[in-house]
Image (cartoon, rainbow, N blue to C red; front, side, top):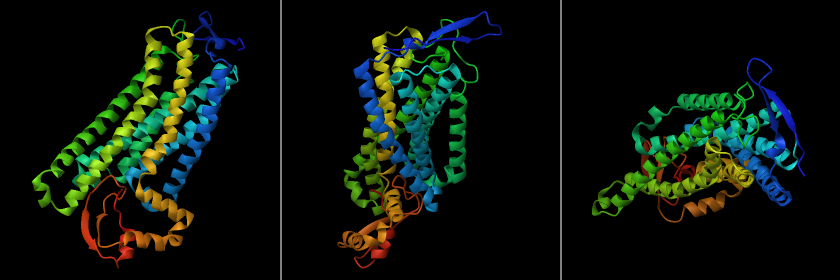
Length: 373
């Protein structure tokens, strides 16, 4: 049984216009549904927190990684997902599982934390997508177009926008009579429509950026099959293979992004135009947990696939010297041709590369090479 929490909120200049918000109308989960969602949050929340904290520690402990825009964007994404792993379970479980009847300001403060975290997460995904787009389509000018200063300003601007948007309801933009959302108490439908439209636009830009990258990779794959490919320089052949490898990963990234976010945003759009039923409200509650799942998957897709970040993690744990003989043996089987990435070195870009044939005896150079996955 849910508690009937009837709260009266004021709007306008006087006290004559008041709206009674019955919080129990938003507490729609039954006992079994509460148990399932509780387990999802209890398992996914700590995993998400530990994964992304690990990414932040590795990036923060390496001065070399901190200077590269790609890792700044990954760090911003990890920070957003850390906040999501903290704010979302606390807010979601308190309201839907414990049926906590908070005051409007307390509830909106919790919701602002969740909104800020997920806005920062999706925005960081956009910055990462744009970084990879510039890297593939503007490889010769990458270092000039995306400097450390510009990357930092982009991150600061992203979080300024995320914080401002998230705290608008707490600063007074609350629902009035007949404009309250059926998904979130005290939230105005126009505000919800605006935030949903912003996230949908960001997702469209992400899809467009990755679609263009995949198109370029498809061109490279076609070129690799032509007789002229034999006349290409080694560096160009490797760059094409890296682009193809990257495109193969993008399909999985796009699928996970759409599966995790499209259901939630679809319910929000429908909520603006029609009144949702209790069954739809329950389905929305389950779809919200997919956003937290997305935050748990992001480190696996964007951070741990970077070889240099994995090496920094191994150095942080002190495993480099311990496993150095095994690494030497692995890299020294025969003559190895490496591409030194003097531009980015994160596995995504290939600027200012120089080719070098390294013999089996040049193990120190092999171990320091930045050949991407």
